[in-house]
Length: 480
Image (tube, rainbow, N blue to C red):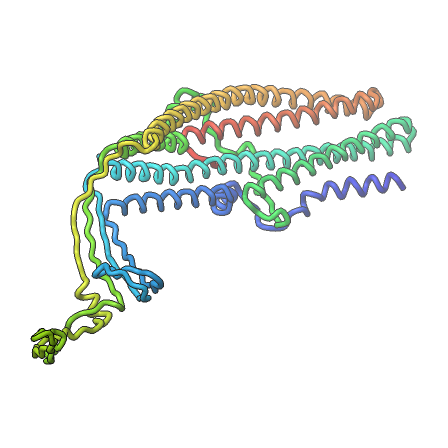
């Protein structure tokens, strides 16, 4: 019963790859295109580029005049002053004022121009940074894709190992039944079959993990069906290692890699920023203009005159110690007043002003000087980052070249190891079948062959990936 369970388990594992995926296969090009469209890091870089463009657009608008409207209308109660005749009274009144003003900077030592230039370079750097992020994503997707391919190849190799051990077990059982070999031989092969099955399960788990990691790079749902196209590694086009010398690749990478272009743009932007802060410490000449009017419901205006006549009897004369009133007729004129209407007041109160203003920074608690000095330090920091990124790029290229050389040597040695291990295993199998070799020695040769195949596969895929990295730095992109 245990033997049948083991047999069914092995068969199920052998069918794992065939039935695990049923959807359209994803090749590297499709994976990269999907990642560049859906990866969150790419979207974040695009948002940052839009923010930089907004800053550039706003800084360009600082060249044109400002225009603003100011208006107020309110109730004044208690002791208030009339804004027209400056009289003080305890009467409440409703007053308002309205103005339209504009100003424009005429000269400020090119601060605005340098700010615009800095923002333009920053915006260009942010756009180029999108390409840098896309390059990083493409390289990571290629690495994940090749790792997934390697895991699938390891599954295939493990499956062949299980099939081989299973065939040997079936043949040995026939020999045991015929009395040619002892039962111990079959038991040892059963144990080997269990170990090979465990190795296959491990390979399947590694393949599932690499697929999940690749999905994460694509921002693809973990539960979504996903199967990659698996071209034979021998058919993946690679440029000869001799044409990927690190010095030549580095010289091309300094020109082609987006990160290097981003750093150069940011260095240029920092130079413009320093110049802008230097200009901020200089005098600024501006022109301004203003249109204004006002209203008050207590304002009085004379709109006419009304004559009147009368007799004044307040004076008197004294005659013989007797007072007698003096009656004196007189004629006068009264002013006729009224409160002007709202629009009438607005029209009569309308005024204009125009002029020049000069702003000279004398002392502002060191703010402008601090900003200027900080901008110079920021510039130095950007230059150091550029130098560091160039060093890292060169190290990565030389490291990839060195590792590619080592992987090629391992791969060449792996080919030889597989050939000799295969011959040794074939010879051991023949000796085992005629009873001249025990099971332990046979399994030793079989395991040596399996290890040689796995080592060869690992070295081969590592070699291909390192060459792809060098091709990528050379500016050829990622392709399989």
